[in-house]
Length: 200
Image (cartoon, rainbow, N blue to C red; front, side, top):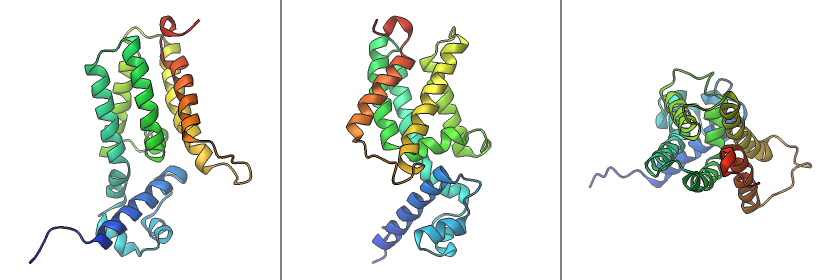
């Protein structure tokens, strides 16, 4: 009897291609990544990539779309729950968990968001980031507060990926995710909580 359920091999190939593509997009950049390059790194033919994904843009959507979905949900819950200091503190913890779970995807759309404008998935990401900025910085935010948000977001995403991909193996010291999480929560709280919410 025919079934619409994908075979385990097809699901595995699709997932592997998406993961390799995400690594390539985050480390070499979307523009510098070709479908052939992705296929070679994944151990598949280019035709296999095209079987699963109609284009490099479709592969980008599959690679970073789920993280953008999660960011949109996180943002919606933050806005719906109020934006006071207690809500911000909870949001920062959840945001750090989101960053830790989606390092490469976030790095890709934060660091390449301007150069890839016009791609639908990037426009979604840019809209989510603007929504996040608007939620953290109120309409009367100073330029310094707006820059603090940008430094916090870009710095956190770069640091998470740099530790995993850009350091020489000899220089890399493994740091437990719990320690990274605690440090990020501390730093982002210092940057993103308004002055009256910071400890003295």
